[in-house]
Image (cartoon, rainbow, N blue to C red; front, side, top):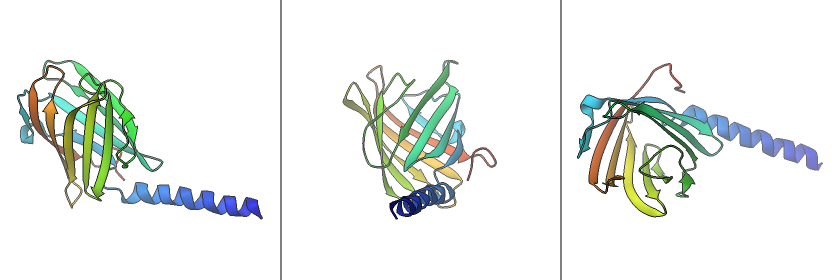
Amino acid sequence: MKAPVALVVGVVALSLSAAQAQTDPLLGTWVMNVAKSHYSPGPPPRNQTSVYEAAGQGVKVTVTGTSADGKATAYSFTTKFDGTDVPVTGNPDWDTTSFKRTDNHTIEFTRKKDGKVVLTGTMVLAKDGTTRTVTTTGVNAKGEKIHNVGVYERQAGRGTN
């Protein structure tokens, strides 16, 4: 009798993950609209693409792009929406991040370098699911105060749900 119960629990867990993948408006491929974004002190990256994929009860985030000075950039992490710090690979400004979802369209995040908070921010998804606005405040690796507003547009047919 234990085996059928375990099977049912497993099927329910997989169904919940599949339901998340179908209903989570964050999932998909997002490309920064540099013209609509504002970076202080600047300059903004030349381009940036973020891919959000379902990963258990959270998301896997992969970001690639080109910095203002023409260098390739790439970083990634997998996080849940529970406020727990997770490691980030490839980013010189911060080495951990945490996400906390406040509603289906808003995520608050904190980024740390060597255990010290360096950035905080909010990610807001438009109700129609076409844009994502990321507002970040803190300091960069050079110690400069920053206030960035990145506007990202969903790419149809490129990793969307």
